[in-house]
Picture 1 (spheres, helix red, strand yellow):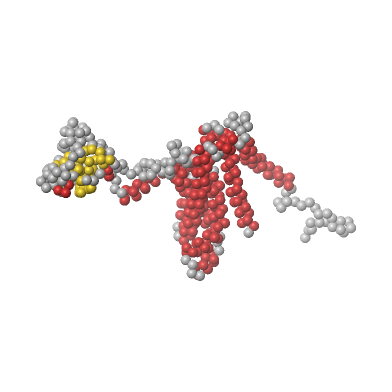
Picture 2 (cartoon, one colour):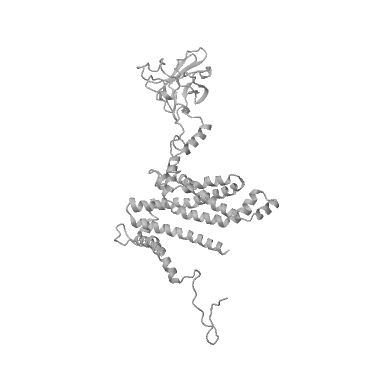
Length: 446
């Protein structure tokens, strides 16, 4: 076996020979191999960072030294403060919810046969670019239920429990016996009496939205109050008689009629297919009211991209994309978990929730921390989704620092403030990156 030292003429060991690196190459050769990467790193990372730091201390033209004025604007400009507030919301909620969903998916899919297929479906959004995901969710959140999936589902659920209005555009015409009663309802100008046939004409409903049943003038009855509610307009049939039922006019089936006396509803009725209705003698001396529920606009769901919901809506699209990433990493951590600990806990009488809370989650804590911190770094730089999903009317309300950097630098031509935002973002990311690297090194030492 060869020694690292050679014997001298007198038998004494000679000085040790120069050591080579582990790979057998000298340091100069290793430096030559690293030089291209270092040049690229300097050109694409170090120089832009240094230039941004220097540029952040100059004014809009780049000729005058502005000191810390650009950094002061970070805390005085309303747009930047809104962006900073939204970034805090993103950092708190998006990584937390995505990691929690990834944990739930990873744990549950271990117990089902088609778990691999489920993981594939959940992970697939990671293959979609932010641009494509933004376009997808711009359509998902469309206000029109016929276009937007979110509102189509929401309206479907709402209409299951709340009946939609049949005649949202109906209103009294000229010289009508009806007048506005406030709150969208209409009421007769005078009281009604037993034996009277009441006319309640309305206009304003598109003919194709009314059933094809012709209206019929109600006949008077001695001991009741009868009447008709109908569309007092005949399309393409010439001019009919105002406030009288003509042969080609259509009734309002399902219209609700209330008899109101002294502010109290004493009786109600619903119009038949031909628009006729009938009330008992209890309605004698009352006024007939068509309640506002007959005329309410149809429910079109939530304004997902409005000022109040736009940020949560965009965070939802981000979670849709990144929950699969969290699930895959956590599933890898689960695969390396010692199963004997879980089985021992079950043998000792622990239920599944106790095993999950006291065994699984503590053992996965390092993985959960890495996933959460990685997502925090990612959301601090989010730009694409906000820029594409938020419409112009609510983009100010959904603003984040990366988007504000773009707007200041290109739309408003304020490169000094844009550079200050870039430096500020870097300062926010560095502690999180340092924490992540420190934790990874600690795991390697173990």
